[in-house]
View 1: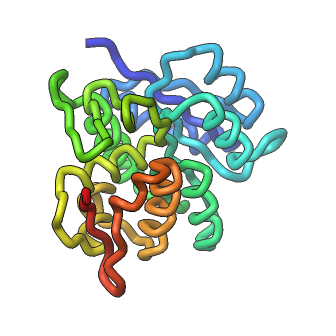
View 2: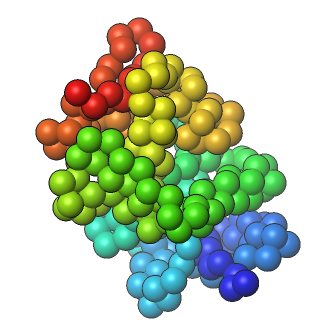
Length: 225
């Protein structure tokens, strides 16, 4: 089986080495970039990078701009690293399409566990696993969503969230349950993480965004009228 490539972007060489050593032990191929500009060059030169681990504070081009550049062309999973704990930074990251958000200092073992969880979900579906709900069709193997036969571009986390909703149609889902199920770990954020993703998902679904109903004081329910 071909080893998956992970791009680690951080201006601190010790941090890159720490993350690389733990990932290599898990049989990943690791590429390193020391600043944002180098990261962009490497990402578009390689074409087959499976996941990006991206630091926020870097010279030449910061992590936010790198994320914007990548997201303009790709839905590759992105894990953002930051020394800040300001929740405004976290919400900005999710707005830009970041899939996971980890504050420094962190446990490398936890980081690797999150990497594995994301890659397991992106590559572990059976080829004939297709979900349908009203005008929406989800091809889990191809990681594609169509509405009335037209492709809809979703980020990795938006795709996971929509899939979870469709698989639990008609069930009232609390924000905590959604976090635990979709993010697949004990998330140390708050409900606004869910609300931010739902808002963007509804927008991308257009008229079908009404399938996702708000249950005030609790969470959401996905229902096709």
